[in-house]
Image (cartoon, rainbow, N blue to C red; front, side):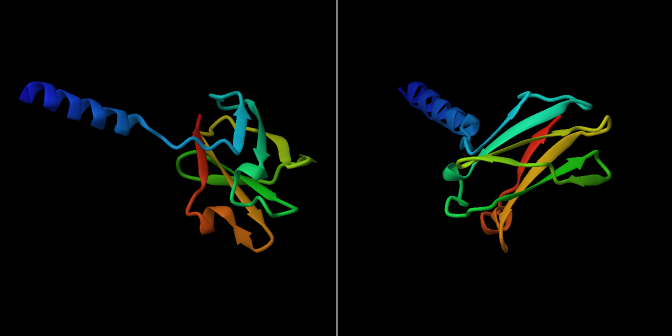
Length: 118
């Protein structure tokens, strides 16, 4: 009986370890980009803390391990969805998105910056 109880507890903890909160406001393609590729993205403000904002500024940080570069892609707005694209450099290891509206920055107010590995 103790073994069954222990197995159930271990199974529950294993499920918690793999559980992640899905952030649906941002999507990008390709899902697993490689250095040198162009990444297209869509950001739905209705699924984010910036729901009441009219204009959203988006900044991309390209990280290569020791340095980072900042990109401000051209943004197209269709309703509540902001979309654009940017090219990863050959040395890019990961990239991050920063979203802001006026003076409030989402990553500061929510302690969140959205990152992806290459």
